[in-house]
Image 1 (cartoon, one colour):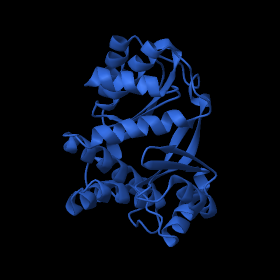
Image 2 (tube, rainbow, N blue to C red; image 1 turned 45 degrees about the vertical axis):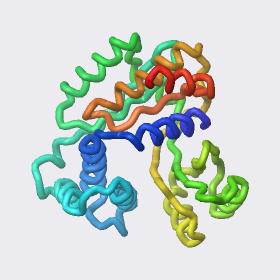
Image 3 (tube, rainbow, N blue to C red; image 1 turned 120 degrees about the vertical axis):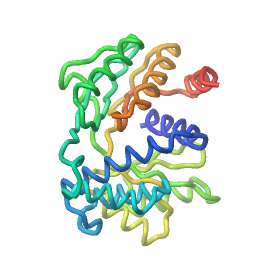
Length: 253
């Protein structure tokens, strides 16, 4: 899981200087709309919506935007019913696996844009199922250490019900089975453990080893895909070493 936590660290660093606020809000609004459409508009009864609302508030999304997105999902606007969830399975440079998660109101546009980026990067679309089996769904918490030692936080998180974790800098990523996301989150809140983010996501079962050059190209591909408006998230099984992180950040500077 170290690859996932390292990429999360990269995105946090980039997020501090991210100017694409509108794009962030667009993605969160789509999450809100889909969650409301599938589970109703009450965050207390719809945990997926609760997570999306928390993410929106963390991003300082205006309350009116949040409410409009939820209303679209409930049929109060024309966009909610048009959105489609699509996943593309990909082999990146050197053979690392990627899953590109798309939420779009135009399937043809999304497919065309994703294929354009893949072609330029020398990556290839895989057949359905060829890549998906390499990943498993997990509940993921991002926890800031906030002055405590990582060791202290680890013990608290294990007591709260976490079954695995990874430490990267000033953050801990804690993992649970999908069905335990809500009860463990509730337990963390009772213990006043700060939660920066909580979500359900895919995690690689094992990491792919490729050359440093191909690893940097793969991270650049992930970044290019995530810049597309219809792409919600890109997950990879790439093993992101400290060397690869340094080379990637050097190339981006």
